[in-house]
Image 1 (cartoon, rainbow, N blue to C red):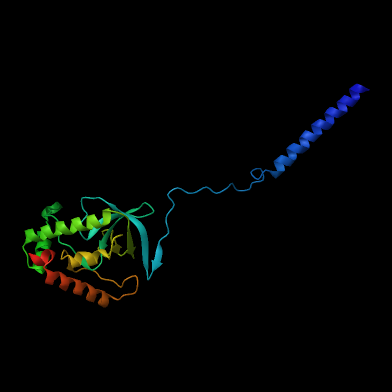
Image 2 (image 1 turned 60 degrees about the horizontal axis):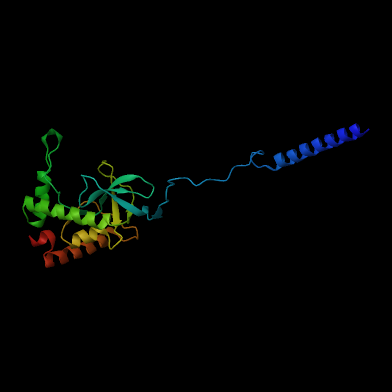
Length: 220
């Protein structure tokens, strides 16, 4: 008799264990196919702000490259991409004499740039070096902002942009004020809606200031 009672007790204990296990299984979200908690995605893209057709990227970083110049350079965007940008409105002289495949050189272009400032070709290259250094100094000291429509008129993956250093005004304004670039190449309405005509007026005023003060190429 005692043996039968013991056997029934063991049976009920086993049933209780099975019921408890079933409850745990039922309440487990992973067993029922519920999605696990989302994990942070490494290196997720930082969304860009949009204004008047421009994408605005803050927190951009300078990327050293042998082809960087005063008005054209490589940039690391917040999402990790590295792109090459060129400034709207301005053109800095070449920073060195170059020869290319097929025997071509950049001497004709340098001569054209020199004529605008009324200087010789060697002086133009020196101005190009100064523009390159100033751009490097302004952008490499910290993060900066890029505003671009991804326009690539020459098909060389150099996209026109407005560039705003952390320390001050738009980069092309500083270069014009210092007499290190000519007002040349493509213009565009600005992200804040300022039309091309008004922007050119502002830059011409800065250029006149540089001429009067004999800054940069205007003082040679």
